[in-house]
Image 1: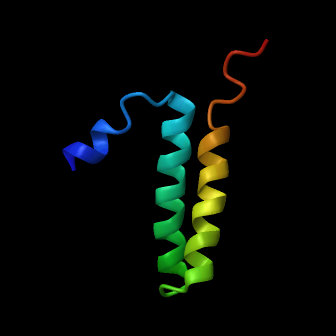
Image 2 (image 1 turned 135 degrees about the vertical axis):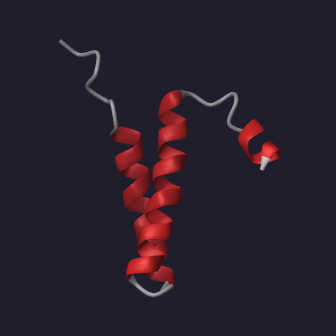
Length: 61
């Protein structure tokens, strides 16, 4: 676990959000489709996109 978390130290906030979103999406997709591979991959893709876009417009005026 420490090695995995250490690999994120050089990532930007947006990169971490993307990875976190993909992980959560993969788990959600797997749960909703009873472990179906397509559902898991689809969930990871959607979660990654959402994670990437979180906070995208924070600093725009």
